[in-house]
Length: 564
Image 1: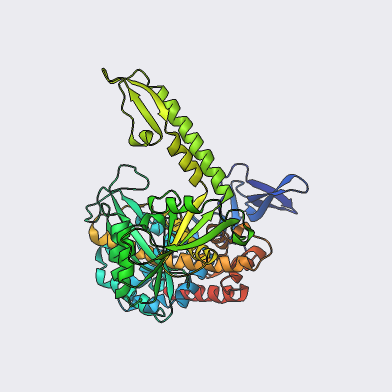
Image 2: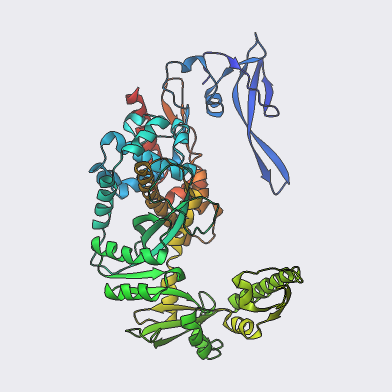
């Protein structure tokens, strides 16, 4: 259908072509190029966007496709319409809407957040997932071309976003977390993986922001952010934020009390090596929580045990764990003299890991020695890492560095321990069971990577404690939703013979963003085209199909019509 006004032919060099049919010159727009592997040619994809005007060759009579490809161009009929794009991307939003409905998040949040703000909170969480950004000033750009959860799909300004973040209270986030955890089955034993990261703060006066020990130091103050994750049900449970100067080991002991406060009694913790300490083990014993902790084979409390059992299991096929191509064995003993209980210590050896660690050690030693040789006959002080592997000889009279001498016993001991690692469990299990349990925390690690890589949350860009608390809370809501997207896609991919590259969260969202509704001349939105095979495969993971998409599309169109 052609519109009843003229517009300038778009200025898109190399993308506009003309085709004459009868007395009419049709204007074509090249919107894509597809490479054909068979013919080894690139085929352009073109769509008709209008008819050239006979009176003025610089003008054309546009059609609906013109509105789709050039939504920001001014047209005469746009003046009375709401400031919303004529092309709405609905695919990803529909998936997120289903997850929000499945979790009854609107009902839970509605107890603590008023209706007007509730929609915007969900929109901000959705915005961070789809755009991989959490900067409030760009939210209106997202809202311009997406459906919304706000009343009448109202597009709020960035100043309203700022006001919302400032106005939210701790009671709202605490209330949600209490209800969210109350809905979990506390009778069932669950394993929680507890992981933490730190985030830079680029603005504002925020109490929890301090200079600490960041994983990546860019010279900014930080705060620490931790999440407890239920590996059985594959869901985030609760989060913590604490000052940047507090280390992970200290905070874990406080988190144990919080888990008890949420009603979790039958709990096992799966922890990374950063949490391995006598005090943490004692705290978990005091709470009667079981645990699974990874420890490097070179760690002081276990390296002697590794050496004692070296060459006793590495070549025995009965000790081979096929899923990971690793050999493992289990011994039972106390970790240290004052330990009150015997622990199950699972020792593992990987040939691949051994080769990699030996190569890295050799490379590191070569680089260290080359660096030291550059400073011979100089008064120079080296860091503590150098004295671990070398005896540093200096001239007693003038303090000049002379030469390094290898600490051969230290180097040979590290080579002996290469490829080994341990998992310590409080409960009896086989080496294979312990490794499978520890590997189940992979989803939690992906959750953290998603938090920092795909939600735009490497840094907190906000002024004031209240706004910071609000943003962290909305980020947690986004993590719940994005994690569910991940598990749906992972489960669906496990059923497939192939591993399509569009079944990752970022790729799936990009593909779903191509499902669009366009506004036609009657001022109503309709689906622009049929759902593709790739989009159907992604939607299937969430229990959605083309008929459900059509139903939701009609609902969106109806809501927008009623909002006018």
